[in-house]
Image 1 (tube, each protein chain N blue to C red):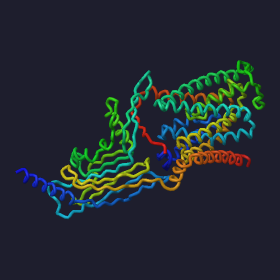
Image 2: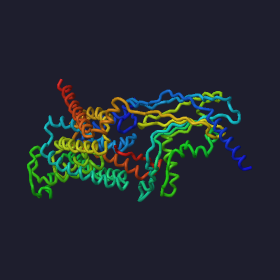
Image 3: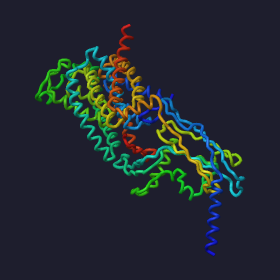
Image 4: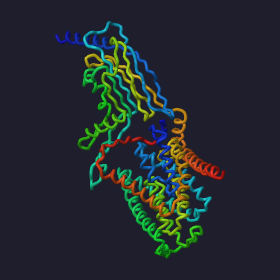
Length: 255
Length: 305
């Protein structure tokens, strides 16, 4: 009976959906904004939370947690040098349409166990999925994307930390993410996925604001909104300090 | 101690920048070069984005040049009239240079072009100066009479003008051309251009060595100030925090440099400068010739707001 089978299927779908919704994230952040001051030297953000559920803990597969923090995305030009006429010259270039300026992933189990490839594709969780590169015409564009990931990983902008989320009693989780000093302003999208057997059962999203403050903020805004005044200010500082130093040394010598 | 630079958007060690500024300041005072040819590549090496390094370097050179020129003004070793003629050429040259710069940027080969410019100009100037100064030093040791300056084609051009401080009566065309050429280099290479200006004044215009340094500093102020304004308005790449750190070190260094400069003989001064120029040239040439450890480079394409 096809109709009966359809009803059964619908019921099963509804049931799994309700199970999926039965586990929710209650999140805490050590800070939800990062202030870039003159002496800003990077930041460590503690992400912690609990899993809220109405029913007893499901026993079929262990709960895993995946945390991602992603900085503002922007197009990136990746160039490759080659030897031509004896010197090393930029020859090929690939434009990556959108790459996050910062991207960190932390998981409570090895990545492939915590998240299936299908779910990774759907939610764009792993580093290479977070980078969008379409319509590259250069042959071997893949190696350029790999180079981008390698360079940014070395500088601490991209990171994948497996087994870095501590999970107690399938309920309490916490992890610490290190943000480097060279941060760009913007909304840092923070996502938490709860998974069972590689499937996402619940998802939570929030934003960490990264902003320049104080003098940094003032100078940045002035340079964008009143560039002529900013330029004159730069020159004035230069002339005064040059003159001041000359006058100061003259005084010292005349003594 | 790390400091976050608001425009460059990187964090750098404050003492490293102070030290860099100081070192460049000493050179500026000693040789009358802005020091940009050294400062700009060094800023690249410590991770400052090239556009910010060029623009901020220009601003820093303004400060150390003001500081240096004041010391020279007191000793009356600045030819103001010659400086004004050079500046006129320099401003035209800077505008031309910006046009060339933007054209090459659209071709995507500006980095290579700038490096090649450095290697070629530093190589030629450094080599010529070194040979010439060694010869001059040898002659002065032997105690022979200094060779009389030759009166070449430079002295047969029209539009003659008297430059009293330099003791010259020559056409304004060569100094305008020198200024124009150096102005172009300022815009393309992010340098003051003293390393070209100083030898050009000595060998081409025949100015006495004692007024060369002060006059060069004087004209560098105007051209670098114009460059700073152009970058601040069109690209918004002047980082005041970086500039302040550099110039604190720079202005102090320039004062020491000027004192050291008066203690050395002109020929010794020139040999030292020549060696320094050759050293920087060799380093840049090696970077082009040797296989880099990372053949890929990443540049964010950011819209200018």
